Image (tube, rainbow, N blue to C red; front, top):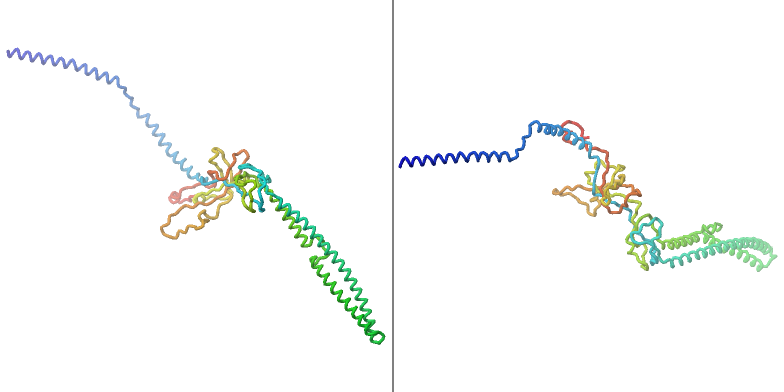
Length: 396
């Protein structure tokens, strides 16, 4: 029995070994199939990666040189977007008061210089002009009468002088006769009375002549047109004509009228009261406010390019006209006084005015539009300061 059991165990062990050996080839075959099914990326040769790296290392110095050159030679354009379109804006008014009788324009209408804008009722001004014309005639007649009186007075004075000579001769004759007792005292007294009366009349006439001459401005022979009273009457007439003319209000320049509805027909307009506004289309400029640190090399006369936000792609050319002598904060009612020790430094802005050309083929510029301004200063940035210190060269 023991032998039989040992043989049975040996048979089972042999069978298990055979089964294991049969399964191992199957596992090896499965692993080989998986290895063949999975794709294997080929390893890049070392020779292919070295040229790319070499090219990158070779381009780095070139990029540094190009960048350095761009930095040193660049910076000559001062650019700011704190800039706006400005134009002349005139408040239309007149120096005479009256009732609006007609409005000849509408809101936002383009007008030319001299175009009729509105009218005032001119009745009272026409009457004033007629009175002034009549007053000129009255003054002329008065002066002509004075000149005639002056001439008449001269004739009377000549006659009075002749009478004095006659009465003087008669008086002397009676005086001689009375001394010889050939004439009565009454005859002598009458002769003396006549002589004294002639002299008194001459003095009176001469006084009247002087008064007439004074009324004629001391120049009785001068033309009437040179007399102050006549000139005053003519000036009054001119003033009446001017006021009548100013009842018709015309455009002082080319532009576009705005806020016209604020004026209505039949409205009483006081003298020097603004009726509406006129925005110029001819005199347009750029008002820029760059930082003080950006104005180092900006000078009047330098060329500029203007880019308007409303018109992408359009470019206007201009010239720096002037630069303000003070910052915007300096013109405030209460300028800042940084006298304490805990103040914060704020970069100031300086106003700058740029004249621009407005060709007819360009879009219309409107006051208040935002723009970007580039000014060509013609001055490169130069070598940085630390390199100047290191190499002993000027940054310029």
